[in-house]
Image (cartoon, rainbow, N blue to C red; front, side):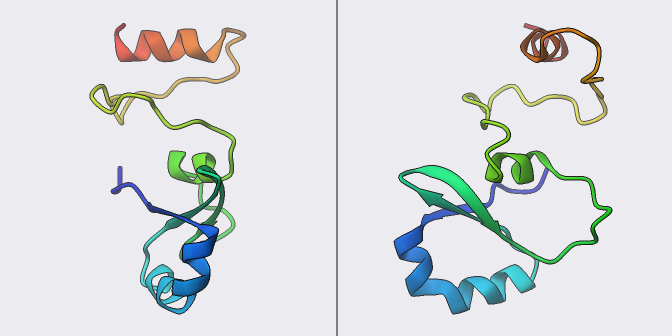
Length: 97
């Protein structure tokens, strides 16, 4: 997984917009927050067919980031989200907890 995107508040965004847009054009992602909550993402333009990453989903507010970073999942493991089971149970199984 790529490095975590930079996070900054809307006020800081206003002051650094030009440099951040240049960085986004170079492939970096920046998560914009309001009151500490991710609300938007500035990043490179990608094809519409590209699958969203976990960072994309966090930036959209559809996922919450992991509270602990010391137990990353095996990138080769796929979890079918339509199993009829609760997602937290499936994640616990994948993480071996």
